[in-house]
Amino acid sequence: MAIAMLPMPSRSHKLSGSAAVLFFLWLVCSPVQAALNIEIFGGGANQIPVAIVPFAEEERLGAQSLTPVISADLRRTGLFKLVDAGGLRPHEPVEVSYPDWISRGASALAIGTAIPVSGGQISIRVRLLDVARRAELGNYVETVPPEQLRAAAHRIADMIYEKLTGDAGVFSTRIAYVIKQGKKYSLQVADADGFNAQPVIEYTEPIISPAWSPDGTRLAYVSFENKKPVVYIQTLATRTRKAVANFRGSNSAPAWSPDGRKLAVVLSVMGGSQIFLINSDGGGLQRLTQSSGIDTEPSFSPDGRYIIFTSDRGGSPQIYRMPVTGGVSKVAERLTFEGSYNVSPRYSPDGKGFTFIHRSGDRFNVAIQDFATGQVRLLTDSKFDESPSFAPNGRMVLYATEIRGRGILSAVSSDGRTRQQLSTQAGDIREPAWGPLRRLQ
Image (tube, rainbow, N blue to C red; front, top):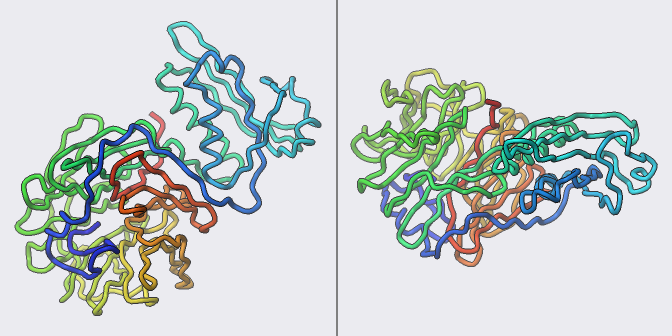
């Protein structure tokens, strides 16, 4: 969300310079639960049939079992059909009877072991097998403490996903979002499946616009803790933070450059709301846009050469693109022409398109537009969506939506065929942002 606009469909939808509207964007809610519940709607065509056999000695892990997490990860994508292993329990390739799995319709088979070893560690070995070719496609070997079993399961699911689709898996990534609990606003970070949610910072004033650094170690966000919008950067490991944009007036809508050295921010320090570039330490202020309207919600292209942003310079909120040259530009290319309201653009990871919120009648939906053709595809049909954010592999879009007056998280595949609803038992969730791929330490 950018402070300079009113993106909430239940409110008046127009650009405004007032930050006060943020206090009307939240509903009172009861305490947040530790994990998100996931419901899946629809499924992709041509699903890959894969069987995940419970690993040897996995039953000794109890609630920390690996295969249920792996299966849930794959199922959520809509790309896989999970084949029931039935009574078959091979754990080594020599134990696999391939005709049995062919008869069950499995194209791929994951088998393995999860054996407790000295020091309370768990030794994990997993093999992914091609049933038709009777060949190994990939493997995973790691020894982890019990508290890391769920993370290991996500890494195994990533391996399976990558070997079977050719795309990077995103099950080991994290998401950030803001939840309001009574009078308290909390910026949360959770695993991509919603588990292990942890508060980054909590205040009784609004927190908005979380943005992940490219390396996933820091979050930029806007806090109203001092009764005005200020952009902060916080290091997740140490919880140290710094105000990097605290100029006169409004400071909002941070977006990281791909190299992590700079941020695009929206400031009103020179009058109006315009886009500026600053170093990640808060220095080196440079103005990028200059228009008679409000320019906001910047997003960098993957190569850092362009930004797309929302502006009402043409009379209604639309999405524009301009090169990042280090100088001020009064000219930008308009990208959206369907309808009178298109906001919140975010580049796709491959740079070939962008996701955004498109108004159609009285609905505000997640859409994707291709740069080459200009074609727009609506991905959702709900009443009230906001803040779309691509998964780092470009296959899913995370967004916030509203159901029965409460904000929840949802995700939709980039082809619109599969939709997930991630919701807490209680709470009002907004401002989601999908983090980058996790780098091996």
